[in-house]
Image 1 (cartoon, rainbow, N blue to C red):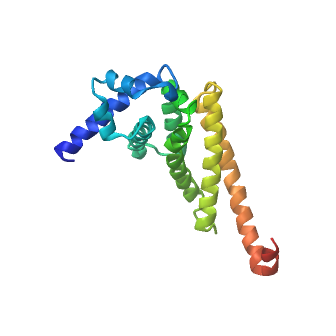
Image 2: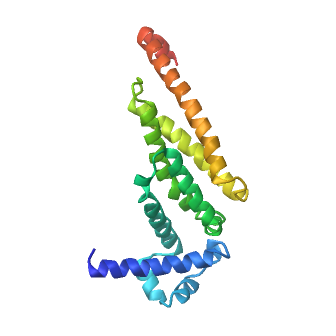
Image 3: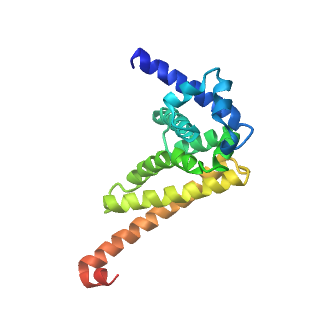
Length: 205
């Protein structure tokens, strides 16, 4: 990065850190630009030079956290370790995540873990599909299905006060995924064989 890019990134990080501090105590909708810039000794002009509004700052903040988290990807030997790392992050930053979820920016929180979880599930599904007659579309469908299910479970976990530990959630999720994928793959293969034998049945379905 150039010197100006480094300076810009550092300024954005100062604004994000100030926002995080404010999100420890209240919803994102209750926070003002004035409070953010006062918290990091900057001014409103600087804020609006870098961000259109608070929600754009929050989006940048969550994206940076996601990038930082995924930098550790090579340290994970299984998709379960990746899922646990994301849940650990959410629990460690419980107040910030609740602040986002309780505001109109809850979609930002979904985006924070959706793409990363999708990639983790894809890796697990690719491994399970070795030597199986499963198409790319079928693998993508299964990955999206489990990602959407995980997102729903995680949102409920956040709303419910994160009572279960990340370890317990990963244990349940692993049982559902690994216990279900083989059955789903078998169904896909059986349906394909039926369609090859009786194409008219596939058209009727």
